[in-house]
Image 1 (cartoon, rainbow, N blue to C red):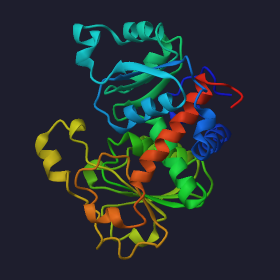
Image 2: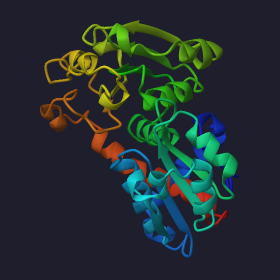
Image 3: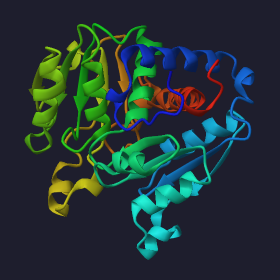
Image 4: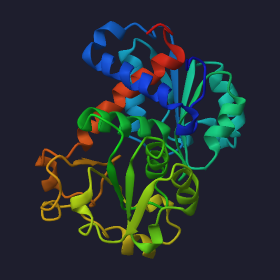
Length: 309
């Protein structure tokens, strides 16, 4: 039972709880009208200290479709944070107005700090390069829907694996499922952190390999998770410019890919997936964005909605 809990890290949820959320998301997708009053009278606060399109709007759409209301801010300059208010005081105040808080913050650990000062559930919508648990829920639901399982897969992660919080959260969670293998594709400067390899992967005996050549592993992959090189995580503009177009997925690179490969991307994309790939039936990143709304509906319903749903 998730009612009243915080979600800071994907590891906060047991595998059985994940499966319950996915099952609920699928039921909501099939019959959304059945759930349209589940959160009537409830208020969701979205506190976004960093820019967002999909995460913020999908949470707000999810709450509105459940019959609830939303308040919040999309940039810190429109809040008292611009006056120097501490995060703790912001959270205490907003918790007095809302039934649930969704927060994105550029500082690692901000969501954990917020959860310690909040009297209502806090959901981490991204804390720096650390975690993004609801994107992981989105990714897993998409894989489950399109591949039929989240087990026994070879998953390729390509691009910015050093700073990519979506990669970190998804890799650690997929490591908990049976018989998954991982391929990390990145330039040397953007390799997957050692704490991921020595932590979740080692703990679960996950087979993995690292390479800087996407073409060399394309034919082995069941899932390809593309990511952008994130300008906002770089301290040096020259390094960003040098690495930003290191990988560009196009039709030529897909020639040796499996027919049932699924291509995911947390979005936004910049140049890392060519527009021509959008027409490929294996491109699932826009469907992935819609699954994100359904799984966030399931999460909201489980945290503050009718427990019997």
